[in-house]
Length: 248
Image (cartoon, rainbow, N blue to C red; front, side, top):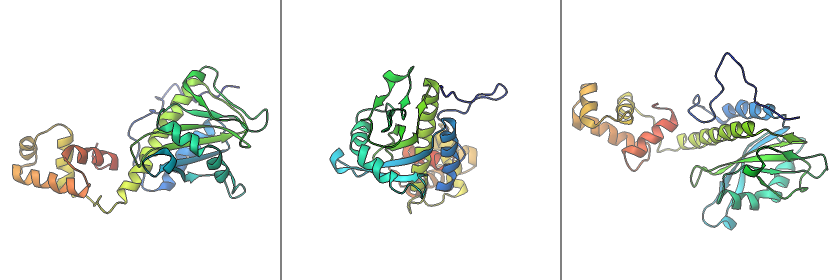
């Protein structure tokens, strides 16, 4: 049986990548992950982040979110021991999804029409099959969204759909972490307004005219917002403000 994405004729499909509703805590990510899990009849999900920097040998996989369950306390440890080294090495070179087969002969993860765009991990190391979607967002945002099942046979469009959603999960997770940073102080309404207009491509003179402020005041607001967002310049501040949900 091939699992296909559920589509409706009276509404557009969910975008694979793009801005979603701003999440306020990690608990907001669980419904998204459960929805993805149900889409392919997986039994479990887990989100791993690559921790550490430098050589792959000095990095490790850290579990950020999971629903392995209290009845399976050893699954996370078994997964990390089986595949962490290969997954850390893989994400340095490729963003192709990873798939693996479980110990039993009927515990398999397949994608017949997309096999050339996936890579295989060593089989028969775990009691379940699965798929892992790599996401690379920078030194602190690299990781995987993983789904485990007894059996899965995934169509190509579903793999693309889940990979896009995995990217959004990792972006939301990174945004939550950065939002908790002391540097990411709350922005004032004037700072947000100036950043929004700057993000729309307006220069300081145009922003000043639009808001009825002096150019000096506009630059002061943009400067203070840049400092609060721990950014090196106005462009980075705009990017972070979008990621944090301050502006669109």
